[in-house]
Image (cartoon, rainbow, N blue to C red):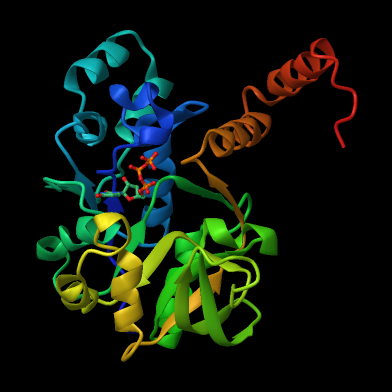
Length: 300
Ligand code: UTP
């Protein structure tokens, strides 16, 4: 698989139950981190990695995602008339020129594996990326996580799955990989274990929502029956793929925020606010004031 990835799949057809009631009308992927929706961070990461075709797996409740990537003629005209050129540029560059968005409907939420399978007709048999926008990965001054993985996958002719080191007591919250000779940042995956107890975990390398997979994964997904929770699991198809394809665990450089949880979304918001060119000072002052008013003195 020395071919460079050009297509990225964003499965966004989940129900987002952890953020109800907000997600009753606003898709989870449209929740903002400061001034940009979650999905924009993942899209920018895919484009930076070289992708020019973005495939969104949506459902009938997620029109806001398609609307967001559509051209907003009226808004653009109004901004232009009002001389708000900075905002006009921001709106126009949600998707840069030469990048196309494709929307595929997942009629029933049958799981992440099923969502990826829905992209088959668009992807064909070439290698592609899967990004879960809930996992926001921030690498302040360096390459994004997907670009790091794409470089690795292309150089070594392998698939790749992003992993991060987690404390052993947290393994039961993650998919954990067992690798062969993990060195520096990567190692070939031997098997993946879903949510093992700390004492059973084969390592402390946890799967994060970035994958680079060969097109043949669709054949494995076709054969994958319903697994845990009655859903078609991407992990099960990857386990089957491992029999004849090398897929590496890749420990990316950067910080990952799990924005599928309340605390992860708050952490990402704080981090991006503190680093924001316009509001960083105000954000720091506001946090100091909040801690003082709440009587929090120990912030170690
Ligand atoms: P999650 O397990 O986080 O589920 O899905 P969710 O519905 O988004 O959120 P909660 O747990 O109810 O709060 C992981 C990813 O897989 C996508 C989701 O949109 C998310 O990006 N997904 C999941 C689908 O696209 N289709 C599915 O059938 C299931």
